Image (cartoon, rainbow, N blue to C red; front, side, top):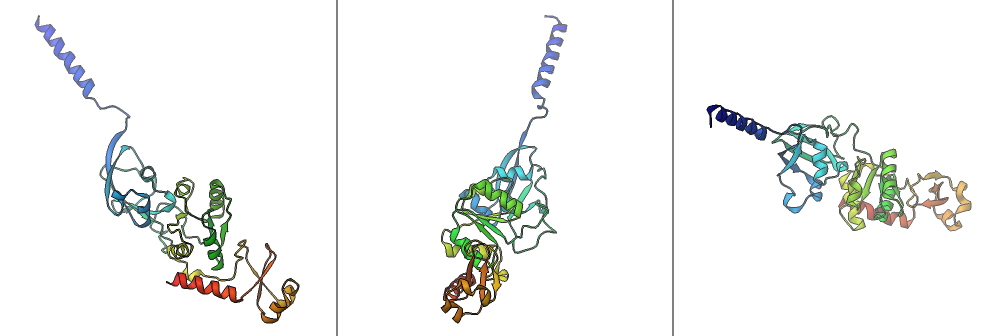
Length: 275
């Protein structure tokens, strides 16, 4: 075989080597990142990832939002994200080796000047509850908080009302909070009604916002203070004789007064949350 043939073969091999070794253009490449989730966000992680930093590889390019959602964390419970100790928004694109710190909602602290996760503050003490939290709804109303509840709410209805009225969703359904449109929500961990109240009051730091006996426990409407002579036809004579302070619900057409039932309920609730 002539030298020219060997030369052509060598050139062909070089061309083939170049083709096979060339990196594909426009295709995703997996890169590794380190994540650390704090406080209640750990409830959504598997045991081996709770309360610790862990590594996870993703195809890139990828944003903070996409990684958090992929890891099963509801964005509605995320209040602050740091990448390499710098606050970022959810559309921040990640680079290989980035360290991502993710924090749950800061309802008792104003971080509006720091966070870039959302434009408006998460703090809003009006609520809407799912069908699992009827007793909690009554207790929150008793404390004076604007609390919507029906036992036949559909998930879509809860989300739509929360968005339009800027309410915080309280739920025992983790999947509900994973809806991408939700930006205010909390998964109530406790299953016992008294513990649920303590949990929510502590979580949202509601202690200084109690306004007892300002809302109807049945329908959530604001109560109107009434003179005895204006509602005497709606109450028993004995009640009219004993009490002088009355409150009227225009939606339920009911009259309330601070009798022994109210005093028991108020003592119970205040004792629960103060403990």
